[in-house]
Amino acid sequence: MNHYNTRVKRGFYRSRDGAIFGVCRGIADYFDFSLFWTRMLTVILLVVTGFWPVIILYLIAALLMKPEPQSRYRY
Image (cartoon, rainbow, N blue to C red; front, top):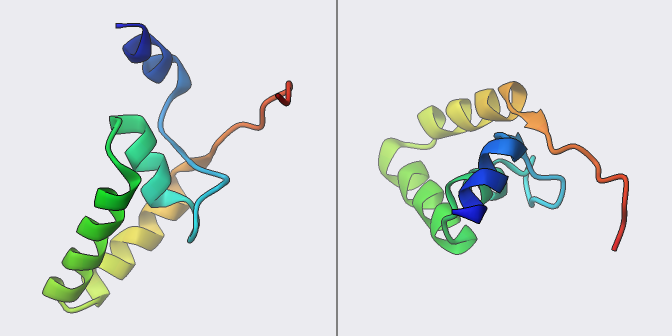
Protein backbone atom coordinates (compact mmCIF):
# COMPACT_ATOMS: atom_id res chain seq x y z
CA MET A 1 0.00 0.00 0.00
CA ASN A 2 2.89 2.34 0.71
CA HIS A 3 4.24 1.76 -2.80
CA TYR A 4 0.87 2.71 -4.29
CA ASN A 5 0.86 6.03 -2.43
CA THR A 6 4.39 6.76 -3.64
CA ARG A 7 3.44 5.95 -7.23
CA VAL A 8 0.36 8.15 -7.20
CA LYS A 9 2.30 11.03 -5.69
CA ARG A 10 5.14 10.58 -8.16
CA GLY A 11 3.15 10.65 -11.39
CA PHE A 12 3.77 9.36 -14.89
CA TYR A 13 7.16 10.53 -16.18
CA ARG A 14 9.89 9.61 -18.64
CA SER A 15 12.92 8.35 -16.79
CA ARG A 16 16.13 10.33 -16.99
CA ASP A 17 18.07 7.04 -16.80
CA GLY A 18 16.37 5.37 -19.76
CA ALA A 19 18.08 4.10 -22.89
CA ILE A 20 16.02 5.86 -25.60
CA PHE A 21 14.10 8.84 -24.21
CA GLY A 22 13.32 6.84 -21.03
CA VAL A 23 9.78 5.89 -22.10
CA CYS A 24 10.01 2.15 -21.35
CA ARG A 25 11.65 2.75 -17.97
CA GLY A 26 9.03 5.36 -17.07
CA ILE A 27 6.20 2.98 -17.97
CA ALA A 28 7.86 0.11 -16.09
CA ASP A 29 8.36 2.27 -12.99
CA TYR A 30 4.83 3.63 -13.02
CA PHE A 31 3.10 0.26 -13.42
CA ASP A 32 5.72 -1.60 -11.33
CA PHE A 33 6.63 -3.94 -14.21
CA SER A 34 9.99 -5.44 -15.00
CA LEU A 35 12.01 -3.16 -17.26
CA PHE A 36 13.20 -6.19 -19.24
CA TRP A 37 9.65 -7.35 -20.05
CA THR A 38 8.51 -3.84 -20.88
CA ARG A 39 11.32 -3.50 -23.40
CA MET A 40 10.70 -7.01 -24.76
CA LEU A 41 7.03 -6.22 -25.31
CA THR A 42 8.03 -3.04 -27.13
CA VAL A 43 10.45 -4.94 -29.38
CA ILE A 44 7.88 -7.67 -30.09
CA LEU A 45 5.26 -5.06 -30.99
CA LEU A 46 7.84 -3.29 -33.12
CA VAL A 47 8.50 -6.43 -35.17
CA VAL A 48 4.90 -7.65 -35.36
CA THR A 49 3.32 -4.33 -36.40
CA GLY A 50 5.87 -3.47 -39.06
CA PHE A 51 7.97 -0.88 -37.20
CA TRP A 52 6.22 2.42 -38.06
CA PRO A 53 3.13 2.28 -35.79
CA VAL A 54 5.23 1.54 -32.71
CA ILE A 55 7.91 4.06 -33.64
CA ILE A 56 5.28 6.79 -34.07
CA LEU A 57 3.54 5.89 -30.79
CA TYR A 58 6.89 5.75 -28.98
CA LEU A 59 7.86 9.21 -30.24
CA ILE A 60 4.44 10.62 -29.32
CA ALA A 61 4.82 9.15 -25.82
CA ALA A 62 8.30 10.65 -25.55
CA LEU A 63 6.93 14.07 -26.48
CA LEU A 64 3.85 13.93 -24.24
CA MET A 65 5.44 12.43 -21.10
CA LYS A 66 7.19 14.96 -18.89
CA PRO A 67 10.78 14.20 -17.87
CA GLU A 68 11.20 12.84 -14.37
CA PRO A 69 11.80 15.69 -11.91
CA GLN A 70 15.34 15.93 -10.66
CA SER A 71 15.71 15.13 -7.01
CA ARG A 72 16.92 17.95 -4.80
CA TYR A 73 18.72 15.48 -2.60
CA ARG A 74 21.28 13.05 -3.95
CA TYR A 75 22.00 9.90 -1.99
